[in-house]
Image (cartoon, rainbow, N blue to C red; front, side):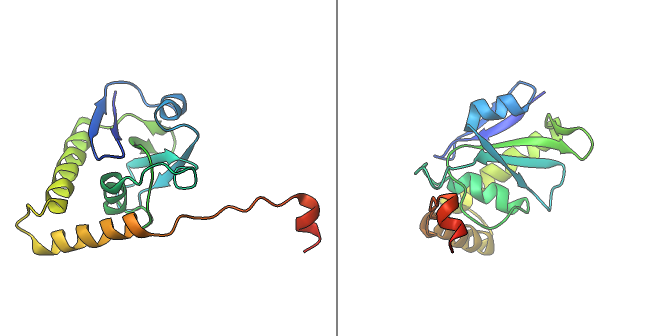
Length: 151
């Protein structure tokens, strides 16, 4: 029974607990689910207003989600990764999945530090990390129902 948490500074934590909507909320606040299309056995979870409320952008967490097939965009604040099954939904990560995600985390940190034998991995990681750092923050405009109807 476990899930992973990547802090905004890139630190990886392995939690020995059953992931539930409530445990995810305790890690990231009100959450949005991030679909990982390359690895459909996992889901990412991020705070639903992370970029808007000024949470720090999570470079390593963003790269982990993007590498797993999530949308190429910045993710802010903590990132939670759980197992996923189409019928049971949120579930613990399998031990082998934890190992592979730890390896991915290590490779991403190494690539960002320039410590990789693969120059293409380094270039891709640096390019995506720069996009995560510098992409514009989405703007939210609150409009009353009356104002919206008069448009």
